[in-house]
Image (cartoon, rainbow, N blue to C red; front, side, top):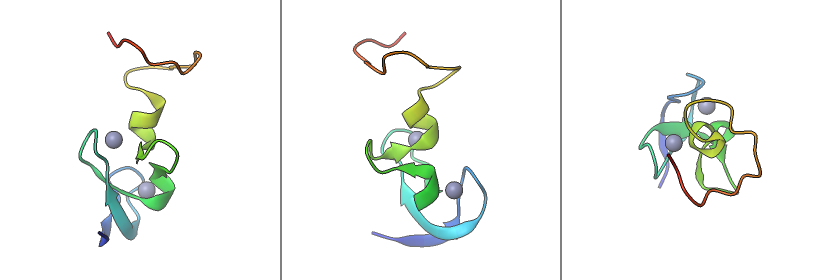
Length: 59
Ligand SMILES: [Zn+2]
Ligand SMILES: [Zn+2]
């Protein structure tokens, strides 16, 4: 489903998609198409997650 509004990340008006993880409404540019979550959730939360990208455990 598509909703027009302001992106919760970049703040521009666009078609919005709901991130299943954080529930934010974000535009297509701020949604990671591979992971199906917003770019913030795709990066991981809280800091630079520049690792293998293997998310087995989170703490
Ligand atoms: Zn955006
Ligand atoms: Zn998210």
